[in-house]
Amino acid sequence: MTTVIPFGPQHPVLPEPVSLKLEIDNDVVVGVLPSLGYVHRGLEKFIDTKDYNQTTYICERICGICSALHGITYTRAVEKLFDVEIPERAQYIRVIVGELNRVHSHLLWLGLFADGFGFESLFYECWKYREAVLDVLERITGNRVIHSISRVGGVSRDLTKEQIDMTLKMLDAVESQVKDIEKVFVNNYTVKQRLVGLATMSKQLAYEAGTAGPTLRGSGNAVDVRETADWDIYKDLGFKPVVEKDGDCYARTKVRITELYESIKLIRNAISKLPNGEVAIPIKGFPTGEAIMRTEQPRGEVVYYVKGNGTKNLERLKIRTPTFANIPSLLLMLPGVKLADVPIVVLTIDPCISCTER
Amino acid sequence: MGMLNLVLTNISRKPPTRLYPFEIREPFKEFKGRIVFNPENCILCGLCQKKCPPDAITVTKADKTWELNVFRCIMCTECVNGCPKDCISISNERAKTGAKEFIKVAVPIVDKPKAPKAETPKAASSK
Image: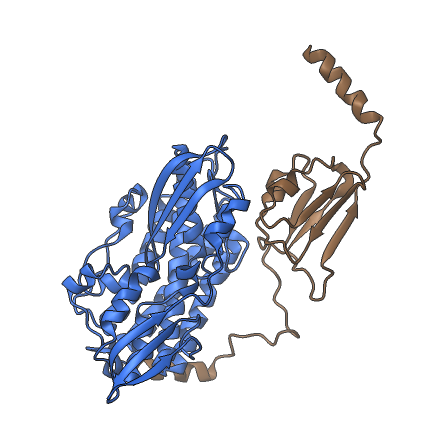
């Protein structure tokens, strides 16, 4: 006989509300029914009242964690509509801020994940290291969480010599600190007992379910939009996607830890190659036509579709966020998992519900 | 043993947090704290009102006032970059707790007769 147990919308491991109705048979999940829509804000409709410059700030407020990358993706999409090439320095600054964003997002996730399996001191360690990254972001962009760095035509602030030195210093410190916590996540007996072999997804299944981001790469698929999308800077910086083969929760954790090193490497390369020149160009006129832009966010691939109609307001903005793509894979992962492990499995897709519902 | 080392070193370390509000960190000099409006050069053009994404700024030409809704402002600095007379700047001091919702500034704009005078020679030269 199966019992239905509601998981969420309010649950200690969930920072945002999502409801999963779990069908439980003898402590093992046999079926899942998700229900979403608790934090729908109607942001895609709200842009009707704002012009295309102001929409940047709405897009940044879709998600509090990956805000910079939402803004960057939107502005790149609108620049594609205008068919303009923005200065190289601005693109490098976007990459630096975007990767710093990824570092802080992954550290936040590692902390939440440690909290999810009951490792409180590890949780505090991760969040302590994240604070240094946030301080640097605050000094570069002026804001702690919603950075507002990218705008149509370039970036709003230039990087000074002092800020670059400070960033490099922070990266050295964070890299050595990540090495400390990596030992715990990878070698600790308790952590391994909880994670190894849990909610395994095969390479084929992950690909067919349309999974995105570290969840997909944890199953052995070397798919990263930073490598495949038409943003040449990542190719110049020598980016390589991080892949793990096993497809379980442990592999997904390792992907995110290794991506921290990859991001740190990318920021260092971007700073060493940072060209001189302008950081923004003026853009005149109103957008027409349609464009699609993809960017790799901390949680996976985000897709922006914009359509202009020759007025200052965009006709349509459609966003597909990574968590939206990852929820079907979550429903495939959960059956067969014990009830006590459900919070960990839900956290491994790094759910960002506010993103998904917009 | 990685975690044990971390925990043991943390025992002898001082806490990474501060005793807020008794100990307040100095704001970074790049921090976007609050909008500062200098009414001296303002011409009441209303560009800041047009550019403001959350509609926090209201410019009233009839009353000659410039008004900012502090609670609505999102510190995007669109108005700072968009002001043609550089009247608006950003300060790194955070707005104090319990601040008033509206900042209303009277603009000492030049008298009305002067404006058409300044315009007429331009119009004449363009012809």
